[in-house]
Each structure stands twice: as C-alpha cells, then as structure tokens.
Length: 525
Image 1: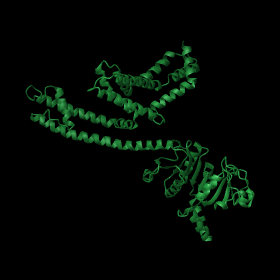
Image 2: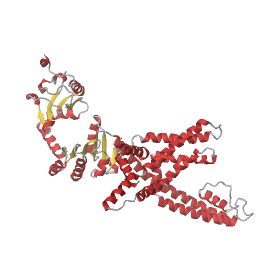
Image 3: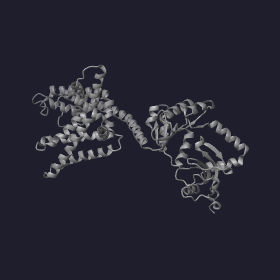
Image 4: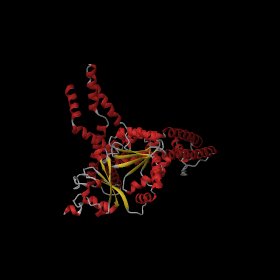
C-alpha cells in the first residue's frame, strides 16, 4: 500500500496535465497578475452581490423556486472555490516525494504517516485561517429551511476582500499599524471600563437612574459617550456621573484624533506602494519598449524625439523628485535603482524591453547598469552616456552597443561649424528644425522585399526625391559604406539604408520595395 501511494504521487508529479491544471487553478485563485484572474474576480463579486440582493428582495416579496436554484448553484461554485484553495494551498505530493527521497538518501525506513500528517497539518492552517472561515460561513446558508442561517449570507460580503486588490491593500494598513491600534484599543477599553464602573456604582442602584438597570447599560453609555455620538437615551444624573462624562468626552476626542492620525499616515504611505505596484503592472503589459535610466536635460530632449516616432518609453530614476517631474509630463516613470539586477528584471530587462539607455552623469553608475542589463539579456541594445574617455573601453567591454560622449560631440560640432558654417546650418535645419518636413531615416531590408539581390545603383532614388547617404552592412559587423552608388553593391537581407528625404517619399519607397516598383526606368526598358 505504501509503495503504491508513493508511486501514485510520482505519477502526479510527472503528469503535465495535473501540474498545469494545478498551476492554472492557483493563478486564477491567487495570482493577481494572471491575465484571466480579473474575469474570475468580476464573476465572483457579481455572484456574492446577487445572492445578497436576493436575500433583501425576499424580505417583502414571495419566495421563488428560481432563486432557490440560483442559490444552490452559487453555493456549489463557492464550495468548488474553497476546495480549490484548499488544494493549491500546499503540495502533498512534494512533501511525500521529498520525505521519501530523503529516507532513501539516509538509508532509513520511510514513514508515510508522518508525511501525510505533515501535509494534513498544512491543510489545517488554511482551514482555520480567517478568510477560510469566512468562506465556510458563506456556504452555511445553503440549508434554506433553517432561516436563522441566512444571516450568514452577509459574510459573503467579506469574500469580496479576496477579489479586490484595493481592499486588500487597505487591510495591510491594519497589519502594519497593529501595535499602534492595539495600544489604542487597550487604552479605550480601560477608559470605557473605568467610566462604566463609576457610572454603575453611582447611578446603578434601584431608583437612582431608571435608564441604568445593569452593568451592560453602563458599558453601552460609556461606549456611546467616548465615541462622541451621544444618543441621549441614557443621561447621567449624579455629580459623579457627570464628572465621568466629562472625562469620557475628552478621551473620546483624543481617541478619534489618535486613530485618525494613525490611519491617515498609514494610508498615505500605502498609497505610494499601491501607485508603485500599479506602474509595475503597466510595465508588464508593455511590449518592445525603451528604458531610459536617469531623468536629466538630455533625457527630456531624447524622450520628445522618441515619442515623435511612437516609441514606448519607461523612465527610471532613483530620485523621487525627478520621477514626480516625469509623471507631471504624463510619462510612465518608476522610482528605482538601475544598478540593481532584481529591479532591472522587474521592469522588463530580459523580457520585453528591447533597449536600455543609461544617461547618468556618473560613469560608475552607467557601468553598473550596463553590466546588469547585459547579464540579464544578451540581445538587448544598450546605449550609454560616457563622461570620461578613459571609461569608454570598460563600457564597451561591459556590453554597451553605443556610447555617447557629449564632450567629444560638442567639440566636433564646434569644429564643423567653424570650418563649414553653411553646410552645418543646412544639416542642422534638416535634423533639428521641426518646420522642415525632410528627415534622416533608416530603411531596414527585411524578408519579402523584392530589392534583395539587386545592385543599389538600380534603385531610382531621384524619382522619390530621396538622397542615399550610405548603407550599414549588418553581416559585416555593422560596417558603414558611405555613398555606395560609386561602387557595385548587392543589397542583402538585414542591410540598413540611411537616406534623407520627405517622410511620405520614404514611406512610398519602403512600400515599393515589396512590389518591385523601385527600378530605374532605363533598367526596366
């Protein structure tokens, strides 16, 4: 029997259907990031609210069989959900297999009962957890002949806590501030008990105060007074009772102020955590996006240009003030350390991020970010700012694809302007003047283009009012060939043509590359 059970658990462990179905069940019940969980949550919330709505409807309306059937169907779903949560809470098969293999390693006798007992104790932790008890109380009203059980339907409202992340976050406030709240509860209890005792001693005797007949009346009066509600159904008569009332009212103000301060402070801190989680969720939905590390002046100009070409951007900076400035511009931004590999992985490096641009003024930070990004993803494009020319070799060795040296660029720009000011102004106008529609663009030669194999001199660039600057041969370590029209060059797949022209003309040329309409007229003849 013991051998058969162990073999059965090994069979489950090797069954892809069992493991996949259990993983799906766990995701749909517990993983808030699972894409289908929100539909399950909406359905369960609707089920809870609709069953409570039926309870309210039946107070002043005739009993309907249809509602009975609906209630039974809802109960079956609640039971299946509870059993599913019990099932995925822990893995009995893993406990049995681990204990069995450990006994083989130690050459000792395997005790199946101990493994089952260990797994059962884990299940008991779930069964007696607060949310599990709420689930069970929500199932009790299934026996409708006992109408007293129907009050437990209200416990289904607490089930909504399972399906709404915002309410879960709110509950975390009480967990994080439990010491302060416990202190507040103990202080309030002592004050209420003190006031109740004084009230009962001086106004509880027969005939003294007709509204205070027992100690519960005194507790009720103290609680209503300290909460500053003051219904007025019980009013102190004796001087001692009135004195205690003053103490309770003053303490009531202190308790309210203290509790408000605790909750508002905790809520403010938690809101930042909620916003951070929301941003991380948005990042997970991004596909083929660019990460910009460091929100600086150069970053702002770069972001504007990337947005013009409809690129998806994520801004990362360790300074909360700079992240706040980025958010004011409606940019997707997250506060974090770009040198932390765990953080980089969390924001999509190694998954859906295609490029990371490091723009910190500190070369050491840029180097650490480059190393982390390249370790996580061997194919991601890395662009980094370099402030010291001596660090260039280290950044290349770390895995940077392209280096930006602002000092070197500034020197080259100044020398070109002094040497050829007219040509410089023309190029500046083409590249940076938004009023000019001509632009520098790149055309990547992809599979399916009819241009592959043709000589580059056969392309009629003049017909499109486009100027060819050069070709990047990706198969030759991205070798740049300037003005290849002076030589014979056969275009290959993955080559990149660098051109200057109007946006509409470049778009038309790209389209014609697929339908063989790019040849010069004399070649067609």
